[in-house]
Amino acid sequence: MKKHKVIALVALTLLISIAVNTGGATDNNCNKDNICNVVGTHYKCSTWSNEQYPVIDLFGEKNVPLLANHCNIWNAHVNKLARLILDSNATYTLKDGEKLDLGQGYALEVKQIDIDNEKVWLEFTRDGKYIADQNVSTTTDSNKTWNVTLDNVQGEKNNIVVMKVYVNQLFAGAVDNIVRIDGIWLIDYANARTLNIGDEIGGFTLQKIINGTNSTNLGSLIFKNAKKSPVSCNVVSASYKCSSWSNERYPVIDLFGEKNVPLLANNGSIWQSHVGKLARLMVDSNETYTLKNGEKVDFGNGYALKVRQIDIDSEKVWLEFTKDGQHIADKNLSVNTDDENKTWTVTLDNVQGENNIVVMKVHVKQLFVGVENCIVFIDGIWLIDYSNARTLNIGDEIGGLTLQQIINGTNSSNLGSLIFKNATESPVSCNVASTSYKCSSWSNERYPVIDLFGEKNVPLIADYDPIWKCHVDKLARLVLDSGDKFTLKDGSKLGLGQGYSIKARQVDVAGKKVWLEFDKNGKYVDDTILSTGENWTCYLDKIQGEDNVPVLKVHISNVYQRGNTSVVQIDGIWLIDYSNARTLKIGDKIGGFTLEKIVSGVNKSNMGSLVFGKISNS
Image 1 (cartoon, rainbow, N blue to C red):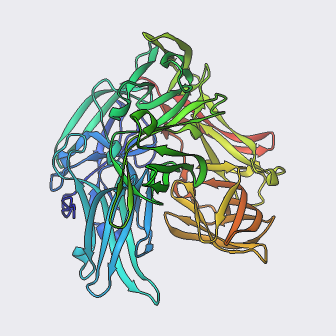
Image 2 (cartoon, helix red, strand yellow; image 1 turned 120 degrees about the vertical axis):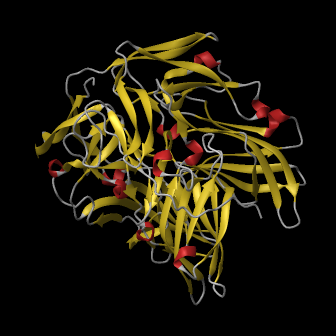
Image 3 (cartoon, rainbow, N blue to C red; image 1 turned 60 degrees about the horizontal axis):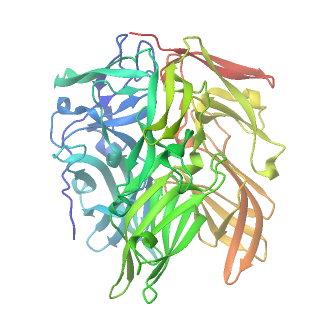
């Protein structure tokens, strides 16, 4: 069995909290010279209360500086960061063979529960591929924590702690054995990055990296305002990582640290890409995935690739591409021909108004007949986040800069560019807007939305309150507002993104009813029984101190029998990321701006706003 080294984490670690300029959130520790100092924080799991880990709030996103196991707190790599995915003390109960989706393609699977020996075999995977596994004993507290450490994370060869799991206890049920997990901590090590002097983030330039020297000086990052001259983000030609596509290239534009792909029609010249229409690059991989019939690879953000059928005799494999559990495209690929036919290029229409856009590429290497299973080897995957693609317009502000000019490509030497200038120094007002639900059954209802520098957020509002009474400063990101049709079989689950899901616990065709369950990270949140044509609004209390807050809406359009399968049809889903809601305060900094004023709504003509000022030069 393949093993990765798993070592107990003893070293205290640290928290970097970044807030540029004066004033800010209460947990920030930055001064007027834009110096971001290292401080310490505790894990949420009470069992690890004597340990700490590093976090840097990089313009609203929590990142963790890498720290080798057993090193002193001041030896952390201040400029080598991985995004914090999870720090949870929630309780998860899992049966033999069950898998817990942790987000961003990471998952934790219960391979086997051994009640007699008081052990559980856990496996950590990313995008369906094995990373590490461990037999965790529950006999003593010291054995109940699994610390996953990996080498070669951003060039660091020492053991970097990337995940922690605390197993509370095992339970032998009448039918199933169950493991209870009370603590999970995880960083996105696969997408870790190294910051260098001169890097620009959120309209600021990294000027100096100060390493820690002792327990009273844990290190710092020093930023200054980016130069005022125009910033050019150029489209470049990138090679696919899959060797079978080595003669092909695709366009990429680095938009302030995030790789984006300008939309390009299939067989179009690279310089004909739509420079102002961008989708985030999610996967460009030459890793080999081995999949059996029925298995799938999760890529994050709801995207997945499933093996529907492997036909050894005809040397074909039937693949299906899905988003949030819904069919997008499928293909029967032959592997007995040249490389060109072994590639499936998925193209879609109406992506930001453009047709025949390449959104995914898959290369099948070969098929294999095992003793028990047929296997397909996939050695190339490329994917963009087309469902969240966006069209940029002159005047749009990103990372504290304003889009000034869009230059289209003309030939292979000039692929196009986006020209930005420093954003205006005048205050920026983000107003609450009244928005219609996309589900036609809720067409007479509206909800509040505030566009916070390109990200849609929903101000928390209590049930039956007028829209202008929403809490302007208490925001949850909008995860889903869809009028699309979704079908769920009896017992099946629909992933909604960000770890949220709904499950058809039971479908009653005769009674035209369905029992639905709402979960977060596999943990029960709420449930209800609905008849055809009914709506379910899930209300929760204690969301940033507010009660009776609607967090999920579902509309049931039909319940029917399809062969031997009972099916429920859903044609409306609305969801906010309530578990990561936040309360903004005067002085908080977001994307190079400081919150200066919170204006509460007074009537339907004035629903409130957040007023931001540009962060001044240090």
